[in-house]
Length: 248
Image (cartoon, rainbow, N blue to C red; front, side, top):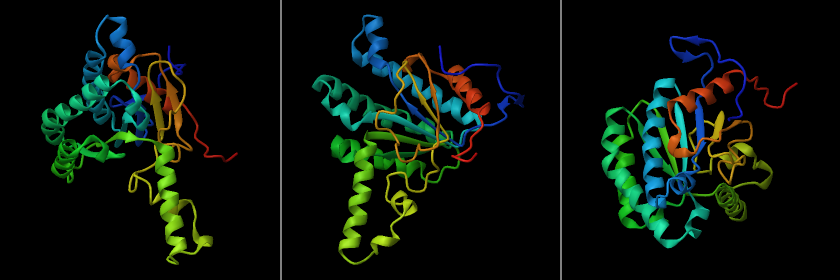
């Protein structure tokens, strides 16, 4: 069961009548999916990578312009060492073997978060992938790696405080827009819709500043089972909502 209910929105040419510009997804449930099948966590993460491929394709076909995937949180470093090793190895494999397909489909890749924690080999692979796809004009795919929203906001606040202390900035001039420009997501629109899989109903330190007015949609579907059907259901729910941004 998901948070969505009611009839599907009217379709025009196979596209929902109101498609979010920017969708963020908290991809949760890989380990539970593996445990339910008696498989090691590594195979759950591999199945999750297959779901990424399906979802990227579905988002592009749906008319979504920006897709941000929460792939590895700053808290995930606390997981068992062998699982972190499997996850980082899968990341390097994905960057090497999937980037050509993303480039072919005109997807522009961007990575946010503390990428340096993954080591020079992975950082180099990320930089190469971003450079290769930098001029693509299709779906904007952002992957959050070693990302935590509280740390992101704190870093932006420190940057502003340093400029104030150095006399480069008047404290009275600091506003929301100024802080926003110092976040990882500079140049990106705020998310319109945040999806979380696996039945959990929380943001887990994902885009806390940016998601202030995002619509939220939760599903019991585990991430490895997520695909075009679930994305269409989430977009359908979004299309039926009236967004007021705090207005009456």
